[in-house]
Image (cartoon, rainbow, N blue to C red; front, top):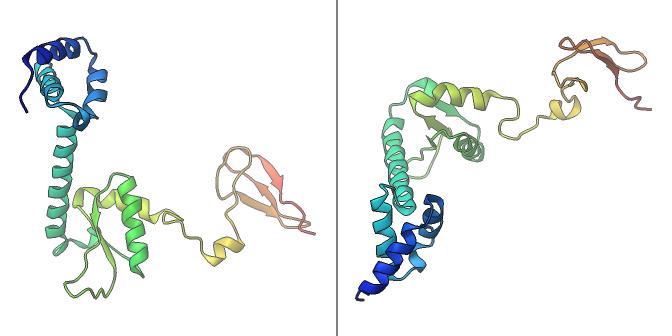
Amino acid sequence: MAVDAAQLKELTATYGGFADDELETLAATMGDLTETAQQALTAEFARRHLTLPAAQVAKEQVEAVEAETALHGFAANAPEDCIFEFTDMEDALLAQSVLSSAGIQSVVPTSEIGAIDTPRLIVGPADAQSAELILSRPNALGTVSAEDALFPESVCPACGAVDPLLESVEPTNLWRCEACDHTWQDADLA
């Protein structure tokens, strides 16, 4: 398709009057524009020394794939502090999702034949400490033990501090917060 020179000149002038954020919004729909409009928009981005959002997204995707590929290569000989073991594959994948939402890239390697002895999650050395902190938090993976369900952690209703002191148990639990010195009593279960 031939580019219409008059239309290109008109669109170049129009896009020249757009603010940067307006150009970026328009670039998000680049595929819907005519070839002439795409050429004018690309030229305006170049004139302003801006990166087309689609090019930036593509660059970030390439970088993510390269980082994951490097992490897969690293996984075979990863040091112990970069490896997290789980009881089942579902927990390993859930942990991977939790770390991903925190911006930490990880891999859950599988063997060539599909058999996994112990599901593992591996992170890079730079992320090992952060991953350890995130995954060691109680209920980081959204699981509640039977004991936690029966005896939920006490929290101060005044300041939100956890693990207050149990002052007495008769007739019901009497608590005192060490952080703010607030006292309260559990509701009577009868």
